[in-house]
Length: 422
Image 1 (cartoon, helix red, strand yellow):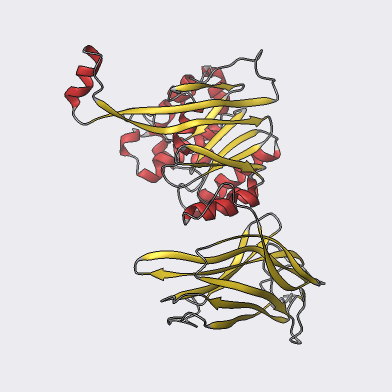
Image 2 (cartoon, one colour):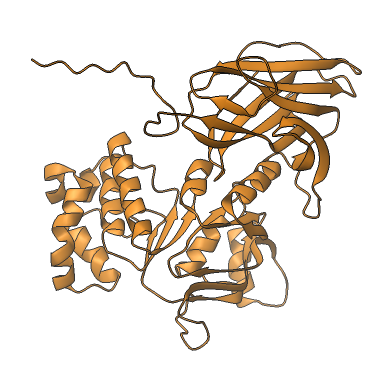
């Protein structure tokens, strides 16, 4: 169970996961479970390790992300932190009141109406009736389910159910907020409201533990990220670096001790070579990447509103049945903004032979706001039904956008604006 042990853990560390493992016993038959309980001595089960010797900590005011593929142990870890599950080994210390957006509405009584369930769950979380009285209207307003708030929960649609559950969890003013893919509930307007509340929590300096498959949100909100894979902690660090590693794990091409390699990169502010994060099978390689401006000159400084071109030079070492050439643009925080590939563009849909060389170009108008951006490149394909990464380069080149007029967000919508007096 999660424990409060202020003497052992400094108060600035609000969550401490210390060498934690969780092992489940799996029985082939129900009777084996009973026999194991009453007739010990013979092993009648197999073990499933959902978490294996995981350690990390979260300090007060941090927003820490946990990412990993399905089955990596993320939800198991959150359930142990909140006390829903007990670790098999190790210990977890928590200092502060937690609100966990995990299995929304798990404690609701279907026979009670919405208001009765607010009081029931609020008291289960340790609030007095008077404290819930003060929070009640804010919860009702946030849920925004109208007269259904006075109807039994069993009559709710799934959308109304999660709206009420989310409203309750997010409005009890916790010291620690734990979120597991819960910000995408309801319609687009409710989702926007959820994200505004999440940003409000962050601005208030509250502690957040955030699990999501949305890498843009992880990049935007998190100060630090922990990667789990098959129950083990792979690494932790800045969001941008951890997201790059996560993408390697997704295609089963991450090696923990892999070192950054040297790759020739030209046309990037006069730099001829630099260290890059790269991986792939090696059947084909990206040998050079660069950017040209509207005059056709190699140039990483692009004027907003002008046309520019992104190039990648590729050499094939083996036959590749259906290669796909791609690029993406990220901001300096690692948020992927845009990109495309030859499959989307229907520009190259054929086999490449061993020894073939290609120069691929992507021409477009620069509509990004002024600032610094990073370019990543991919050379992938399908071999039968299997997706294969031949070569990927992360942050291989930069683009500096020069602008005398910026608008809101990443892109300039190029609005034609008129103001007429009526």
